[in-house]
Image (cartoon, rainbow, N blue to C red; front, side, top):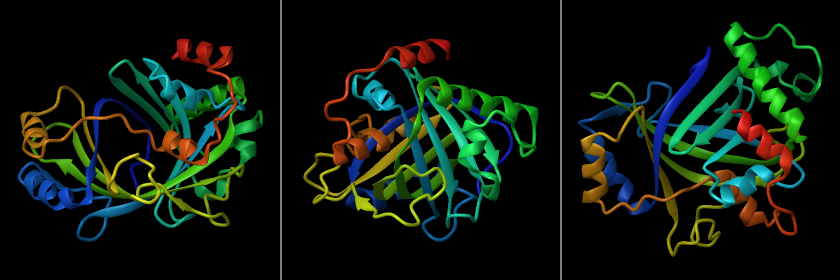
Length: 269
């Protein structure tokens, strides 16, 4: 369903939390500059993302976001659509000052298991050597941090790709849900999902139900993106779905700040 092969992306991101009533107007505004994502289906073009987030016992990766550390990363395992219908992607998503660097490795869904991450040997499931090296990076960080499954995040993504820019993505994320988990393979099939983007859930701390608007580019934002922000009075803000889930659940209470292992791992990126 999603792109395969070696995927190492260096990019810039801008995020906004907007009222749902703004989506139609922004969708119309980006029409001349963007087309529907070919990986999505329907009108509007959408697909479901389910992401397993890993962290250490001290929630150090969450803490790094909480402290807005200039150099930080996430360890996550992502799949698309109905669970089991697409591959699993093991990802290291790093934020290095204002630049996002993401490495991912594709793994066939039936071959994904905790043994793949925690074991010593690697099965022959990688299509390229680059993918294998990216996975070894992912696994090294898991080992060094003692990371394990912490929380799942699921949402519906409406996605567009730029027509006139070499790389541009505009996405609207809604129906944000989470569940606490300790499973490497369940992906939410047997747990309870909790809403985190409605007014009642207060996941964003706003007086309205929110949609996460993201704009991704390979360089500075195109002029049309700046015009969009001005026309709709968009206020750029940080948003981490993983940390929002942690805050909602209150898992971080009583844990110390980022530990030495995470600080050392960050320095090695």
